[in-house]
Amino acid sequence: MANDIDQTLADGEARPRGFLRRHWLGIAIGAACLVALFLLIRYFHHKAETAAQMRDFRNAPVAVGVASASRGDIQVRIPAIGTVTTLANITVRTQISGYLQKILFTEGQLVHAGDVLAQIDPRPYEAAVKQAEGNLKRDQALLANAKLDLERYRQLVKEDSIAVQQLDTQRALVDQYEGVIETDQGALKAAQVNLVYTRVLSPVAGRVGLRQVDQGNYVTPGDANGIVVVNQLQPISVIFPVPEDDVAAIVRRQRASGPLAVEIYDRTNAAKLGVGKLLTFDNQIDTTTGTIKLRALFDNADGTLFPNQFVNVQLLLERLENQLVIPNAAVRRGAPNGVQTTFVYVVGAERTVKVRPVELGAVDGERVAVIKGLDAGEQVVTEGGDRLREGAHVVLPGAAPATGGRSPQSAAGPTPAAKAGHGGSRGHKPGAGNGASS
Image 1 (cartoon, rainbow, N blue to C red):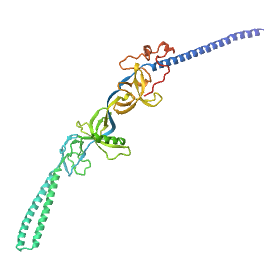
Image 2: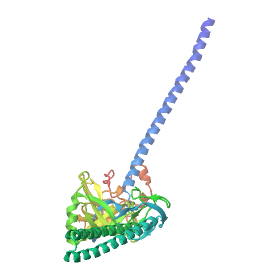
Image 3: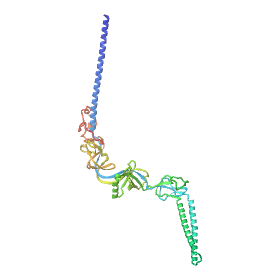
Image 4: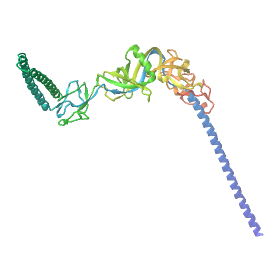
């Protein structure tokens, strides 16, 4: 009996403990469901808020830069990459052998044609001149004596005092001495020329480079490096290739209007280095590149051009007058209406933009001619066009935002209605497509 009572009490205590465990488990599951529901509501609320903000962002007026299409002249240019090339690159070598007494130039010095660059020891060549002069005088005296004898023999032959053969022998001797005189004169001239060669002269006007031999050395005509290199700098030329397809137009324009103008710029294509004229063509087209080399001539009065210098070349082919011109930055390429085309954004009434397909002409630096699609005076977008589309509102430089696309509150930030997912920007349907990218 006592055991039954104990067992009943134990079962009564176990029942409340099991009940409490099930009770707390149900509470935990309910709380988890509430948290999951709260997070799900927050997610959809945030998604709706983000979508509203994106609609407001897309429909907001865009600050842009604009330019007006205007009439002007376009210079048709053929761009190329060129190399400055001297018209005369001369390695100055001695023409005789001898001891190099003096170097008479400073490295990098500008020299004139005929300036003395170096002096070779002249004494051996002065002695050779003296020797040649002595030989000439001796043989001239022998010739004079032979001519006197010839005249005597002629008289004696007339008197039949000597044989005619002796007269002929004397005549041959005179001719022999005359030949010796000519030889002596040639030797004297050669000795005098060698004496002149002891002064090494600059053959052209230009700039001397670094000396290749020092004073005190023995120099010969066979020295590979010579004494110094002289480059002619004024005038100087630029050699550049152009496509073979442009050759006919260049030849036609040059025949019609004379030498074409050529402009050259530095490596960055920013600073103009000079303006010259087209001088000549090469005599054949390079089949490996499909180009032909041209040479342009420049005065280089300021000496800024150096041989082998890299330059950007602009060959001015012709001038097109009274063209409709817009900046290159306004031109865009894409498919705003589903068709690949070249177009511009034109600012119309109420500061809205329209996609306008255009046909382009010649390009002149940062400007391009428009053949079809625009009228003079129309404004085109040059900056900020990445976010534009057909009908988008824009803010022009120095102007207040247009009121047709978005309210001031919407421009400042999303409204409470937009945050709740109920609002949208006025003037455009939510979810409108984006404009074509440039």
